Image (cartoon, rainbow, N blue to C red; front, side, top):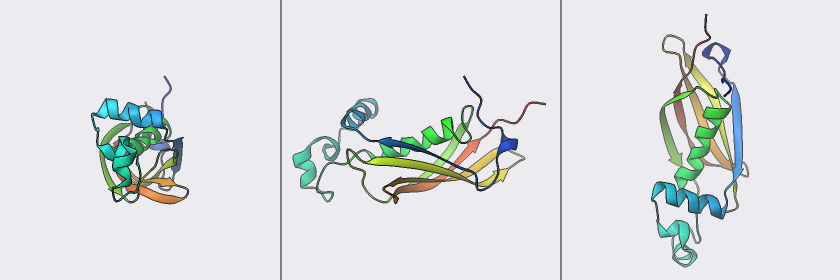
Length: 141
């Protein structure tokens, strides 16, 4: 298993992204894992009559891509998630490619914590935004 960046490797403005196309299989698997069987995710007829006018992916499925960025890219393996705020701005539909981007906005050397702006977008349009706080391993002596 590889080691991510150390706290000492981080700087404000550093950024990383992870993109994934949300498939029917992703929605069904997320339904099974989460237990969220809301018909707006699974039933086209029901969803067509909703304010979304069609099926949408679970918001937390798209938000989970933020975890992928933090855990694999920035800061990467070894990162400990401490908190996350989320605002859902627009729906994600099956077949949409979601790009999750994290950008370091603040560093707390005393606590080895990094604060990152987090945005998920589809076609350049934000669908989720928020802020993450993570604990980052320090470089060994």
